[in-house]
Length: 372
Image (tube, rainbow, N blue to C red; front, top):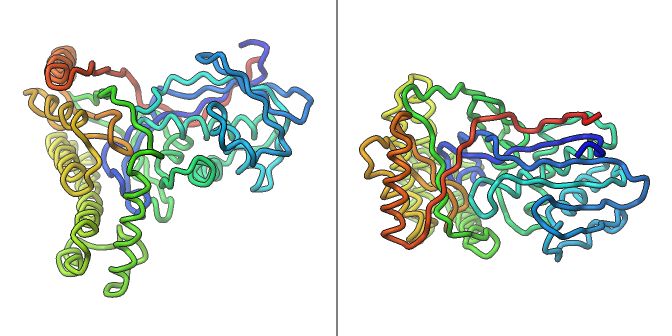
């Protein structure tokens, strides 16, 4: 990698709590992790961006004047979309060679796509000599996911990937982008990330459908109550006003309101060091995702059930868009090996899938290192 000028990274992310409420204007609690997408980049003096990967044999060349035309690429569409949105925002795109090395598992719910988008834009800004505005990078990366890749996502993934801080979780208001960093102090407990190994695809799944349902619910509710986003609806208002919604939309709205309240309680619990309360909130979050938002599925439910049944696990839930991917569990630190063995065996017995566990620290978001 020494013949590249810069090493630019952006992080995958976990989300402690606050699922499927970022696009509803809610507050969420993500953190950047040490699983990353790394871009090695150098100028090439041409009008092209040459893409290659450490884990794939593919090589792709993007014409800087035709960045809008690569949506159909099997490999490179996220990079092309990110470059296009950055260019469309008025930034200079310099011809360069990019080597991508991604340690965020694809389809895991740990936001490999956000890590790719954010690191691509950060690399383009770096090679063009521009200062890094991490919030702007996150917003343009989100735009790439929505307008180019076709996933109508909220801002949480890209913001965490760009703006995360080591050893801290973020209390991010997705409506205002106000962000408070909270030290992650879990006492005798640790977070365990487990992949159910049933890959998911957010475009083919019902993610966009859920987004549409929350928008429909908001439009109906706004006829009766003065709210700008679904997350503005209080628990008290929810009891009064959601009765006007069709049954499916009522369930979706109830999840959003409940999850927003759980984020509030989790913030209090984390600041007070009440880890047992935090664990209970994780369990409640998964129950809501399963019964009200209906984004879990047989395999994630089996994985969570196995985790929750272990005596040294305080709580477990599905993370990410749903329909597969990873769970997050709060486990007593000196019992993690026992927990992993138990969950692996229980889950395999139930589903025939082999769960995979990831060791990841809470890390910084974007990093840039000169290789010279």
